Amino acid sequence: MSFVRFALISALFLVMTVTLGQAQSPASGGPVDPALIDDLVTANRILADQGVLDAYGHVSIRHPANPNRYLISRAMSPADVTAADIMEFDLDSNPVDRRGRSMFLERFIHGEIYKARPDVMAVIHSHSPGVIPFGITNVPLRPVLHSSSFLWVGVPVFEIRDAGGMTNMLIGNADLARALAAKLADKPVALIRGHGNVVVGPNVKRATIRAVYTEVNARLQTIALGLGGSITYISPEEGALRDKSPGEEGRAWDGWKAKALRK
Image (tube, rainbow, N blue to C red; front, side, top):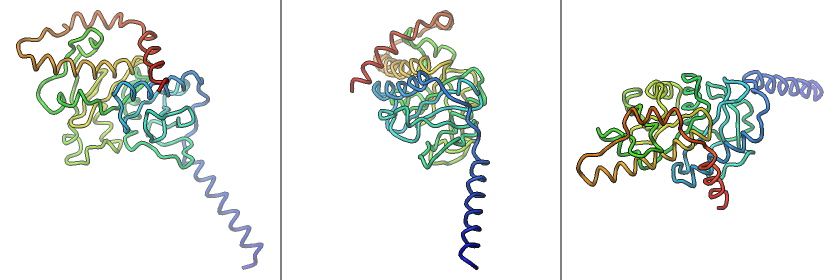
């Protein structure tokens, strides 16, 4: 084979490979307002600073222009996320433009919840430590604090053994994530036995506030249970009234953001 012919064949193979790779990648949902990207980055920083996310949790937002896309950082510590780390995925959790970047193994959680919940615009998966006891015992997580009154609708517990038998306890495929989304149903929070939780919201600020106060509530409820005696929980009527007027998001968000970004 002549050198020229070999070069032509090699070039053709390269073009076919690149074209195939592009065909297999989903199309982008389009540009996103930098302010929204900043909110996503800030949510990561806040939740790490508040002790809700550890090195392995993650936050996503639904693409504002295409509901079949979502945005999430590459696989990294939430405390270190920047705008340059944000990636775009379709709802099957395929990357739009991977460029060799690492991806969260449990990213399927986000895609499957967005499929099941058109109302959800932000998803948080954390290993929030205070909630763990309520996922491994028969004691339900219930609201004891007005700021966590959104829990009045109930907090289901996802048992991964029911969905996948014996696993490594990671929600690393679409089937397990779909089962988790079904367990979440129309609720704002679901616990994952021996693992953590998922929290959703109509925007990333509200989801972040819910994630923080779910952790706070879990710790306070644990303290109350330890005191013994009866506990006066937030009633369904009180919770429903709070849902109608949950309070503005700016005060908590701005304060937490300033604190997180000082570090």
